[in-house]
Length: 268
Image (tube, rainbow, N blue to C red; front, top):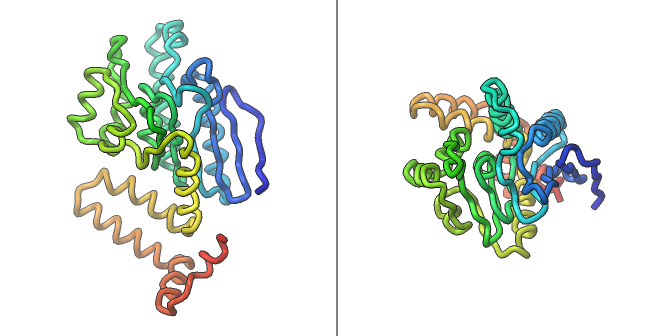
């Protein structure tokens, strides 16, 4: 399968294959893949480019080395002790996280090593996550006197409030198995099966129509912030619009005809 590899951009590698699967790889292993200003900017630029690519189908966030991501660059933060700097830094990080939600394609975290603070936030913000056994997850900013406020936003939307609060208040780390039990990751596998588990998930997504996935992802994030009546109203409209899309009309007709839809055959 042909794969195009793009040059590294401030610690981020970008690859894409002919299926429309994009991979952004954090590539500063000696620095534990911290989210420096440069890395945040590189991620934002790549995500924006993928958002504009109507052939993109899946985005994988991966990392090289012993850590998935250790969070923000504390040395960089300490070197700029200004309120406006910190506001801008956390604002840029939050904007990048929100960009993952707004992408019309699924985003999957491929996690190894450790995911700490904003690195744990990145895992929590992805739509799906696959982790290797032995991974440790934590929001440990409190250990240096900094409550992980922005990581708390997606964390509490993944797991129960008291579970999230314990992590935030104590700085304690949880295992991959605990992260799975609490809803932070979808699958936990032995390290040498990490890519195979990721591929299984990607293939399952590629077998479904992009249009329906885009509609569904947008609805998923919008409705969860609404009251139940407003959520149902939004879901009603979303499903009605989805039914007007060609892939749904073909899928329903194929079900009636007891055959595969044409778009499924086309993905093989």
